[in-house]
Image (cartoon, rainbow, N blue to C red):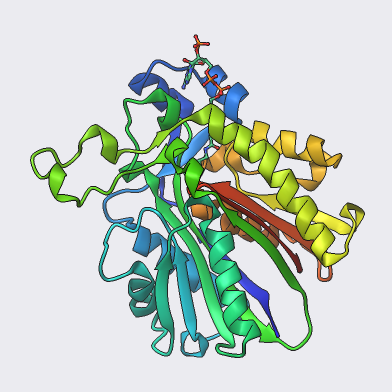
Length: 321
Ligand code: ACO
């Protein structure tokens, strides 16, 4: 059994910050940000637009798209590194907000690869026949974790949530490869704000995201093509059979480089980073939802989803739309 994506949804905060807003905050320019990253603007959450709020809205829309009722859902997974609350897990908040009273709910942290790892987890439950219907969500309010004085990270990130509904079908394909490389974890970090040593200084420098951008860039452009080639091999498929590569939206240059390294047409790599920046675990489901709503994804087309992020972690999956 395989979980077929039968509904998608997303939710973006109302407020939009263009690059000019960042120009007011740090020594940067619209031209630098666009040339180096492809980002023009990002959505920034208000206090009311918590990660759970965005996740719940995205989940409701995905359920509506799937034509299913919340009571049919047996599993809710939320991938996030910015849950707001430690307890209760925001997957349980989503359950409450959407009325999915029959679901088992938990969060999962694999940074920007989180959605992909959560999708793998849901697929494993479905393949075992444990659950039939699931909602998998990627949701972030990274603006709460960003050091707005640090130009090397603040220009990159944005807030938002995306969700998919999976329904168990007897025949279908879901093939994945994934990797975690803990000994490279130091290149992208965010120390827990709730540790006692921060009592006197609750927002100490270490409690913002810190990143060695070049190391992450290098990791992404080498590992993502490797993962994609590996998953194609595992599926015994050629790249010509793939219609779309849905990559984590971290940097337009990374996506361009992955396409070149695979010898693939860049047109097969849709992007929306221009409008949202890097929304971490939310970027893949937000992009999926946009393409779905535009009618760009046709039944029977093969998709590769691929992500990378802190951990370090990376992975790629193949599924049929
Ligand atoms: N505005 C203007 N200049 C800047 C800025 C800025 N915002 N940031 C850096 N610079 C300067 C640097 O100081 C440097 O100046 P110098 O040449 O005088 O020393 C110059 O621009 C080039 O800096 P680099 O760091 O070499 O720029 P690079 O081309 O590597 O781009 C970037 C930086 C965009 C961060 C890139 O390395 C990148 O995208 N890395 C990957 C980031 C990523 O994908 N993170 C994923 C996170 S996933 C997760 O799990 C959360």
